[in-house]
Length: 224
Image 1 (cartoon, helix red, strand yellow):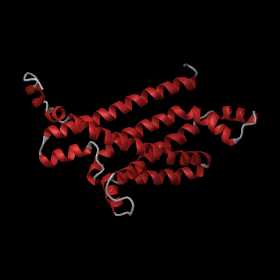
Image 2 (cartoon, rainbow, N blue to C red; image 1 turned 180 degrees about the vertical axis):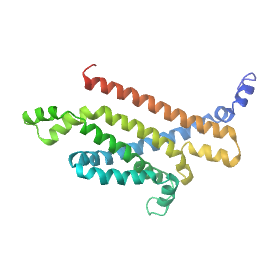
Image 3 (cartoon, rainbow, N blue to C red; image 1 turned 45 degrees about the vertical axis):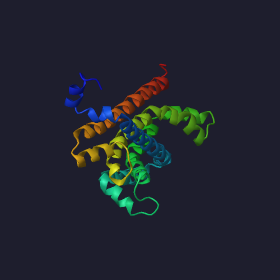
Image 4 (cartoon, helix red, strand yellow; image 1 turned 90 degrees about the vertical axis):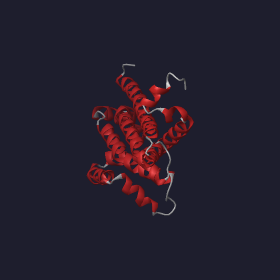
């Protein structure tokens, strides 16, 4: 840190970020890995549920209502609840389970909306060509629904990045550790480092998935 930059860095509360960049980067990676693992598991759970709901419309109300109810539970309450469950307890496993739960309503809803939005005439033409249900799903419905599904993935990813901050309270690590440690130590520079890291992760994720979403939408519309 040069002498001329030190007053600026100090006034912006960036000293911890500059002097402990390696620690901040470690927490950034922890948060990123936690988010990716939770998102991948959430997708594996959400796709079968979304497909099932889109096929049997009478299930939509009960399942979406149940997922909405889970989403309204305060994240800290859910994290603390899972501490008492064997094989979960404290740590990253707890955080991942909770993040998977919170992502479900967003992912399932977008999967259902995307599949329901496929033109019935296109599906009828596929039936006329002798395509079975599985073929129509994999070759017609999911590709056409992909832009809506990716939009849901983007929203879910940004959402669980934010909720993942609270997971630091159950020893899950991540950028939340910087925020809560900064508060407990009355160390504003550490709080700023955590906040900037979380903002950067959420912002980069949103931009990257937005670009993918637009690219897929152009491809589906035949403009690519």
